[in-house]
View 1 (cartoon, rainbow, N blue to C red):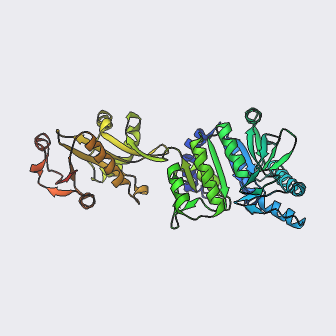
View 2 (cartoon, helix red, strand yellow):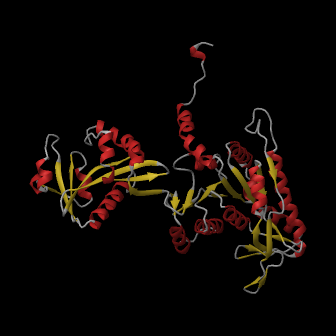
View 3 (cartoon, rainbow, N blue to C red):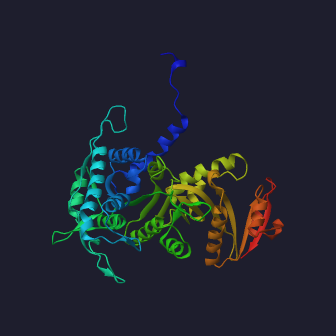
Length: 440
């Protein structure tokens, strides 16, 4: 084959694949509980979603799939002319409706198992061997009578057979849970799939709980909210009138975070590839609800030096920052604070005490892809809090190109004579730096 005939490979694909390596390593061996409703099963993207489940399985991720069946149940009971209304988002399940509900849930389970068994050549499932297992893993109890409404054969999760599920996961099986639960008396109860997913994730101590809904995560009306913490979830549910599905996903996500599931994702089943984008890219495709902030400002440590070098080197080459050797960064690392996002250093700033009253702010930098926002101002506020905690009330900064930004943050230009004596002695203006001051 001649060189000119060589097929061209998309360099963006190569870069994405390389950048996904840390996530592949991180996710391997972890347990994910993924919930999707009957709407997802009916959607054209469901076949590719099955392929993505198979891909996650092949990468060593232990999957528990939890499926709902609301539209299928509604169709069946309507055709049977049986009334099964929803009260506060929970279905009232007459006993005579149970055969039709079991038919809907069973049909979905069989469909999932059939699609996971595909191994056609020239398809993403080729070469995969997935043993899908379902069973009586969920014990239920009656939902009972609430606010005067008898929910009849509707139930709630009583317990999850953790040992049985883990035993199947250890043997490389994919576990499938439906919206059904079984009682000690042999009765079958109709459950909320979201509750099954939540209780399963908590009981299994899952690494992730993932809800696949129609929407691409949580929106504040203008933009997608990529990260939230439980307190923000509480405020969102209190202050905003969102649709029922998103409300309940958020409610479950908040509970999951408070009960030991550190990361819950809400993404769209309708967007092809959203699951992979969420799990294998830094910015994701939906909303992450995390007990700890996904992006945090913290004091730097020695392990951050490599990230700091990569962040500030382009700015040093442009003459925006003074050049600092790696050795100097290591020696002065205690002065630095960083913004970290899922293992990547997005921003940094340093605070150097000058005397008993003043400190210098230096090396303020934010990754160029993340400058649309308040990260620089947030870093500065973090340094100001550090200064106050040490009894310092005066900040100085020397800059050549970012004077306007510091003015916007409350700094005012002063003479170099205002610098503390020790700093003034080593100040040289070969870079023609301007001196700014802020009183705290």
